[in-house]
Image 1 (cartoon, rainbow, N blue to C red):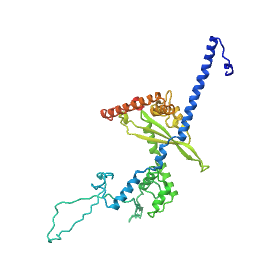
Image 2 (image 1 turned 45 degrees about the vertical axis):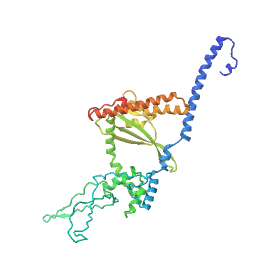
Image 3 (image 1 turned 135 degrees about the horizontal axis):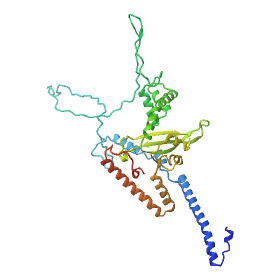
Length: 385
């Protein structure tokens, strides 16, 4: 086609016809060019752009380091933390009241009953109380179940009490120890190998494989609870769905990983003053196939607030759930276009979306103040978006 346009006709009508024929290819090429530019800009931004989360994870700018250095200097100079004559640049500590639920251990320091000056009898006219916050490290406790074997004096029949229900049959761990292990591993991100070393400092030898067996058996016992949480989430009129990519180690090759998905489904009716408490249901999938969300939310016909992840497409349609798009992801596309082109036109839409977000939050706050917790159970689409 380009060879045909090397020599243009002299007739005006033919020239206009040729111009119309050239218009479509030019528009198509322009669109493809802009699409390639936008894709290249996204790849460059992802590869060479600023990554704020990287510095946050490294935590190179910990404020506590400078505060520790200043506190060490104050200790050497003999300055108290609450000294009113401290220099203006010194940080003044604001002490909060200690919580009332903490146990109090009182230690009375008495000067005696006799006056050191005259030998007279002392009587109390008041007292000064100084509180000191201390910490007693967690310690192990061996709980023994003693079951006497009894025999009848008449018929010589034996009797013995039954053992109470235990978390792991024929296992040593109690519920407190298992709870501490699970919280340390999954909330505090403390691997079982490190926990084993911590317990060894207290003279308790618990191998990592033993802890792994206990954790595995406990997670199996918690499956009914997880299923019940899933039922509560799916019973709501609306839920939020999101996926997080995680690295999964390939069993056949320990040096390679593949991308798995951690799917989270949240029911939170607080924005429209629903009566149900918020709850979250987590599911793991070894790949990103859409069959996993479809199986998790099968027969759900409520409203699903989700992003543009293709795996969620099978959840919406006739006889299925209603889609509520994510406004944050919509705004992100306009922001990327502003950064790429520098044009002020795409920036108007993010500003409008930001104004709409402020209005939505204000409306939600006013609704929570004016409506009782049980006064509404159906979500509003303006609050869901």
